[in-house]
Structures are given as C-alpha cells and as structure tokens.
Image 1 (cartoon, rainbow, N blue to C red):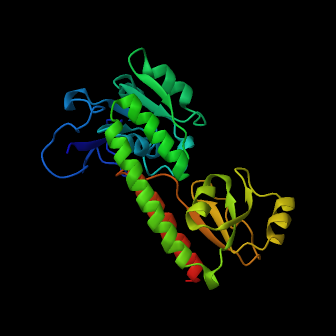
Image 2 (cartoon, rainbow, N blue to C red):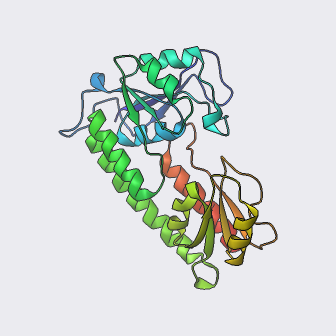
Image 3 (cartoon, helix red, strand yellow):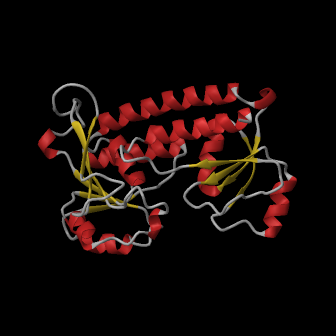
Length: 269
C-alpha cells in the first residue's frame, strides 16, 4: 500500500504540526491501489486542505499527499489568518479543500490560481453525510476503491461503538440529550434521545429555561466553540465533542473519542 504524507504549508517550524509526518496507510512497499478507479502512484493528486477536518476527508477518500494549512494548535480554526507561505502551497495543489464558513475562504480561492481545483467540503461527522462526502471526493481524486473501503470501515466502526454505547445506557434507557448544533451526530452515535439543540450562538436566558425544563441527562458541547457550562444547575453532565481530527487525519478516531467521552459521562465517572 502507498504511504500517506501529511505536511504543513508553512516554512517555519510549528509546535503542533511537524514539517513532514509520514503515515502508513497499510503494510508493504509503496504501490498504487488496485481497481478500475485507482490512479498510478505518480498521478495521485496533491491536496491542500484548510484544516485537519477537510484533510481527514481527503485521506479517507484516498488522497496520499495532503498539506494542512491551519495548525492543530489553533483551537478555533476559522480564527486563523493564512500566511503568504500557506497561500503559496495552495497554488501548487491539484485540489484545494475548504469549507465555505471559513472566513479565509476568499483568500484561498484567490491563491488557488488556474491550476488547482477548488472543492467545498461539507464538514459533518454524521456517518451518512461523511460517507457521501468521502464518496464524492474519491470520485474527484480517482480513488473510488479506497473511498469505498473507508466507508465500509466506518460502517463497521459506528456499529461497534453504537452497540457499546447502548450497552452503557443508564438503567438500560436511552439518555435525553441537548446538543450543540454541530455535535448532534454524536447523539446519534450513542442512540440517545435528542430533546433540544442550541448554538452556534451562546445560549440565551429563554433557551436556558426551555432546555433545562426538558431535563436532559447529557449536554453535548462543541469543544471548538464552547462558552462554558451550557445548562448550569440542571444536573446534566456536559460532554465536550471534538469534531476536528488530529495530525494523523484519522476521522475514525473522532468517533472513538466521542464514544469514550459519552460512555464515561453515562457511567457517572
């Protein structure tokens, strides 16, 4: 199998991201993937992704040369201001992946020039939506076989985690949850009962009263946009949900980490 190469776009060293981080996608010597949708290794696309979230979708879809612009150390990725060296990396890409809500999207589009193909990515960790996006990117990259294998792996992982979380339900009953709008996917992973959502703006006093009255057992907060305790004095356990993968661009790890946090909260520990 071929290697996944994850790089940062800037020339200066970073604390959170290394200048070059090789990641093994499998065992054996470098070789092109098999199948009618696979490209020869030399034809593999060069991908620049604004954040590790887009980068993880690219990796899942089969990209093997992925440069991530926003350092993992930036807690709220949309706050990042791309540097000239970041934009220079964009100009060398075959594909540039970004999200339309990112305020630097206009800079990215301008820097891409005529060669790079700009691709808006639907950043949503809901398993069905994630699979659809990975399938779309695989078709763009010519790596359909890799994307298909990843989708199968996601189905297997989600089924496993869902079973473990249901087994951890307090008193064998689905817990009632309130979720920040970008963490609702984690409620589905746990098979929990959604009773309300909030955000992305801070909870208003009226929302506080309404959501507290529903007596949720859990509050699924967005770790990247947290405003502190969402429902104080409600008795609900607050679980921070992380949407952005780590430097290894492993999207499956996001599901595992969310499941671990949910299981801990449901156990009362």
